[in-house]
Image (tube, rainbow, N blue to C red; front, side):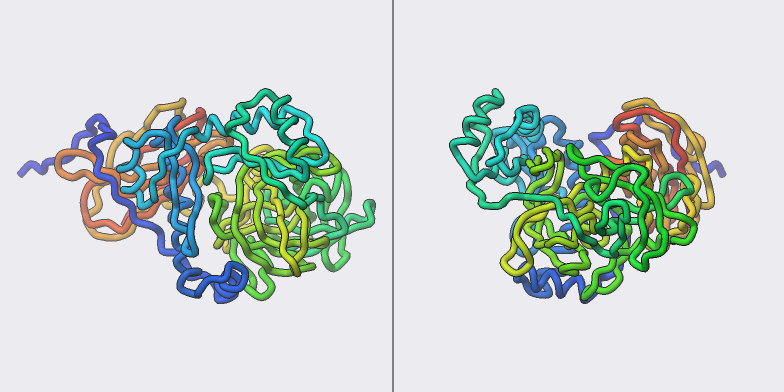
Length: 481
């Protein structure tokens, strides 16, 4: 008897049945939960709900931003349990947002419009009394913090931006870089006479190293580790404008992909999904050790005495001298490196961190994650089957080899996509329903690399690789039951 097999039909996105199966996550440590309870004033149950909601939001937000397109007006977390709120300028988007498990809000300005206003302020030289400015999706404006409202409004007017889109807030803080400091683990810069902090382990090709703050050292400066043993050399450094650096380490150093959380223990790093405003974040530093708080604004511009630094993230996590360059982390997701701030851990304060993604992209670096091999993998190395292809923007390709495969048993289907730097490639696992292909798992972050996992029954499956933006060659790996 002839067995009917599925044809490779054209994909009608609007008709797809979308389901997702999240990967099983390891429970957060008691130290992580305890620090959130202490610093956010929440219960243990609220801390657990918060971490779960933030993890879901890190997957949901990029996908919603793509679907809403130019109508997207930002996202943030609200309440003790960090419920995700997504804003748009079109009330017709309500079903799209709420069906993804987020709260819905209609606002006046898109995120692109607010970013354009902030970019206009970035081009204008600020007075010393203006401390920082950032897009605030929560109130659909650009927030400017200043010691003089008169100075700030004169500067805003001179910049030529839409003043109605700017909110001025009086602030006594005066951010400054944290010199003479160390973070999660100390390291020393003998030529400068001070110490700073290790951020996250990262590699360039086969060469290991770590991220830190740019104001800690210049390209060519040698470093010593916490034990005063020769450690490495600054190969990338940018400050001001940015505040990031990468130190290449010598063969005496290894990279386990963890953060020293002090009271929270040794914490694994498993990715770098960005948490949204209102989401919890924790910082490791050897002076004040382990402290937590929430993200207040992404893409903040800070007017340091040494010069203006752009695209920092503002938090209410406390820090002091000795904490600069150290790791900011949300759950097990790396966020960035301590840059500067104001206040202290007795009375509280504001701390800014340099997001990790820009340094990884510009430096051609790969974040080292917990349990990973310190030698770089070669294109989804841990997957049994490998396929390659090349895409231009908006193209799709089907794998394996333009067709599908049959699974005769139930079990886990796992796929990995390794795309070139600087692109946004997505990976979809689809199952034949008897009449059409339906998405059963998706990896659609704003990154070149994706991974999906799905525990499915027997049937016909295929992977679809999509170039959301950019072009280049990719490697795709898959494991089937």
